[in-house]
Amino acid sequence: MKRILLSISSVLCLGWMSMSQAGAQPSLVIQVPEAFYQHPVRFLHPYINYWHNRAEAAETTGISSFQSKNYATSSCEAEARGQALVVIEPNIFYNPQTGIYYSEITAKVYNQPAADSALGKPLMTVKGQGQSRGWLSFNVEHSTHQSYLQAFDQVIEQLQKNPVFQQSVEQGPLQTYQALCNSIDTLSQPKAFF
Image (cartoon, rainbow, N blue to C red; front, side, top):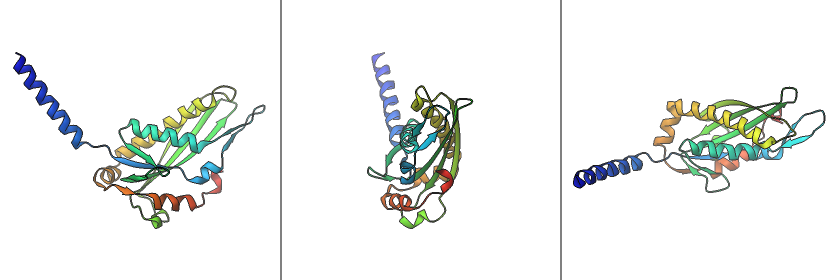
């Protein structure tokens, strides 16, 4: 009986190890352009002024969202190595009458690390929207985080359904995107976002 259990457990362990090695995590580089760090969003309210740094909040939420969906992530400040670069453009709006935060995440995916590919068309562009209830007088960062989470869930779901993205991430080589990150940071963003 012990031999049977030992052989079954060893076969299961070997099968599990081979599956884990075959299914390595796809690696993504996450970037929020520098212009979004320079322009925080002001949430309007008759009695309270609140400035929200959407770039920091969206980047941390984006990295944790992609990691929770089994993607290895890095940022342009770190090593910037991955199979694709995902440029995140966060936007958020607060409605003081209803107490709802509305967020929109636009994700542009690049799979060519050359600096001039920032001027061209990205591999794909997807958008996700989220909303969450909250008030400016209590725990604003939690409410914005929940709104961003909903938007990122939609973005990741659209990316996972897209066969072009899946093929690019699963079969693409590991590349350094530092030149493309620097190039995207120097491009100006549309004034409608600010």
